[in-house]
Length: 305
Image 1 (cartoon, rainbow, N blue to C red):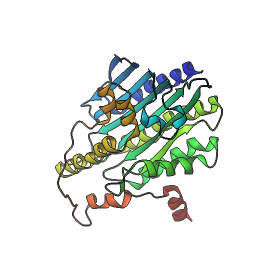
Image 2 (cartoon, rainbow, N blue to C red; image 1 turned 180 degrees about the horizontal axis):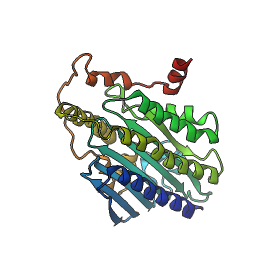
Image 3 (cartoon, one colour; image 1 turned 180 degrees about the vertical axis):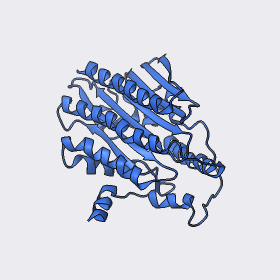
Image 4 (spheres, rainbow, N blue to C red; image 1 turned 135 degrees about the horizontal axis):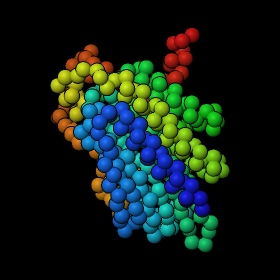
């Protein structure tokens, strides 16, 4: 199978994303931690205590196993028990400035080898944005970039994967979305292999085009302790989602993956507060209006007429 071409794309994306983030930070550098486990190899790159990014993690992994974990076969019971190979790049960026959103992106490739049958492969991934003090122009830029990268692959791709993102990054126990969405997809083999791989590449490069301009625009906004405390409180939602709902976390832990890399998405500082309610009509209360699925581009189109 074409695993070498996937590995090449993934490693290049890791380099490109780290370089773009370092350029925005202006000082701190990613520290590369190459690791090896019983399942495979990887390289976790982490930037800590930068001028802009409190913690940024960009992780590459390439693992193999004798048995597909339950979290990966929920939709493919015929592959239960099959040997597998998985590779991907996953990242979570926690900025210092509360006016810069947290962001996440992931691109991955799975291949399973069922006994007596042909190998079965698919891609997955996406990106999503989690603001604390939202700016509508940033959200529109984020979604327009997502729509633009999807367009060459079909008119239905962005609406479908945008919906999937809204549905997936949803905290059922809170009744709110994790943020303002983006793209999410799994089980991708609807096109030929090369087209699917090109889509993964477009998603990774699109993440850079979507996120970096937002960072550049917001990183110098002055903030105080009130904004910082709200940011730390809202980071708690990120922790809740990743530990309760995220399939990638479950897959990594169930497959015996490297715990430090799996939990690299956790914010370095976070706080929980019992029964917190923002003041009515405050900037903090305004966030609630954004934590529900909205068709951002259609809303913008309607306003422009």
